Amino acid sequence: MIEDIDRAALVKYRLNQAIETIELAKFLVKNDKLVIAVNRIYYGMYYALTALALKNSFETSKHGQLIGWFNKEYISSKKADPKFGKILRNAFQNRTKGDYDAFVSFDYDEVEIMLGEMACFIEEIERLIF
Image 1 (tube, rainbow, N blue to C red):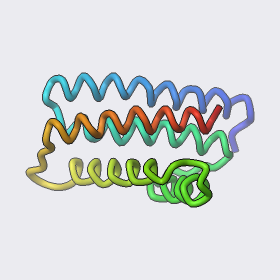
Image 2 (image 1 turned 90 degrees about the vertical axis):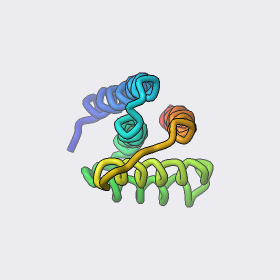
Image 3 (image 1 turned 120 degrees about the vertical axis):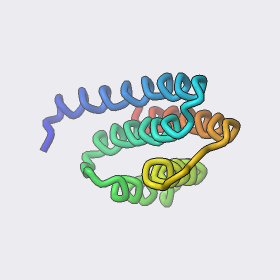
């Protein structure tokens, strides 16, 4: 179990990691590394979501469990707009496709939209934490 002081530091660390990942994803998009950008877009959201879970004393190493927890605690309970559940689900599916399928490519405009959704998602998670 994580101590409260360590938990607060870890929440802050994960949020900073999410914010830094926005910049990394922008760099990758700018340099036409779209499949890798899609991976980073999802992981930026994952880092933010991990911060929210830690704030709420929920810990798991499983992505599916974390997403399920978010949907139950924040989407179903209407603490967060349902669009954020869809954004997260789509990002996870796109990351999985990009990481594990063969001959995958993403359209530049599509990834730009994902990038904007990532930034909105992270802002929402920050709002929910603070």
